[in-house]
Image 1 (cartoon, rainbow, N blue to C red):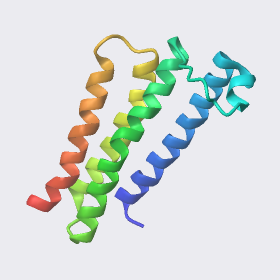
Image 2 (image 1 turned 180 degrees about the vertical axis):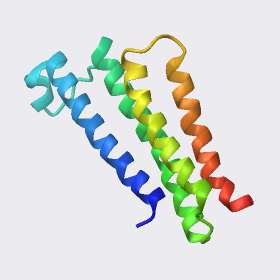
Image 3 (image 1 turned 60 degrees about the horizontal axis):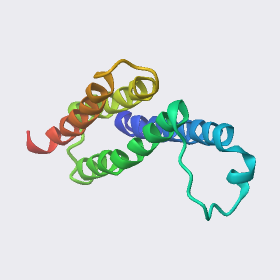
Length: 129
């Protein structure tokens, strides 16, 4: 398996860790009664728990673009050095994004988000070069 696909696998692992974090945060804030219910009544977590949930949702929003970029580059048969750099840059940016969103100072989270977006462009650079 190529190094860029290992970054995809690592990002899947990150998503699994984040879903676990959000599940625990939601359980702690809203309690087992709501978590185990059919959730007919909508409730939102707030504060630290809410930031954990939003950080995970943000990964889910951008992950399809990351996976699609890797797919396109591989299907075109042009995956190379930029694909690897971009894939690992995306992963690292998303790893840093989690604590930046939860605990970080104002402005750090958008920088991490931008780095992840730029990483997708780096992956796609192998197509146009």
